[in-house]
Image (cartoon, rainbow, N blue to C red; front, side):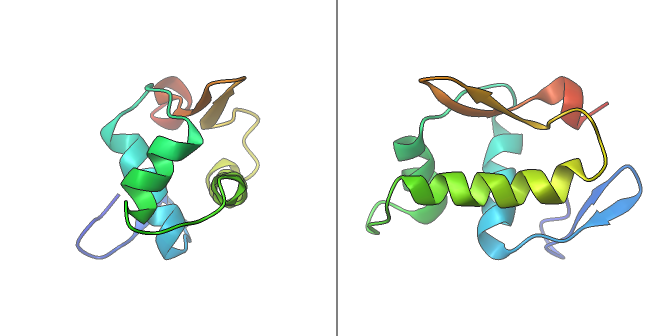
Length: 94
């Protein structure tokens, strides 16, 4: 992830992300393996002073997965039932 140029590459492949997906990935990469529920993700990625529906997080997670996983069988973003989402460090950095 190149923060200066706002670019992401995975296994020598450019990954095209929207601004929200970029911020979401950055947050996950800063906390690999840690599980976040929707509300903390909203506060950290969108900000404290904004109201969005919690299901909006699901939409952006789906977009992020689509961009990152490509043809890979292994999902980089892990869903933890009744808890939230996490970046799977083994899948993301292997």
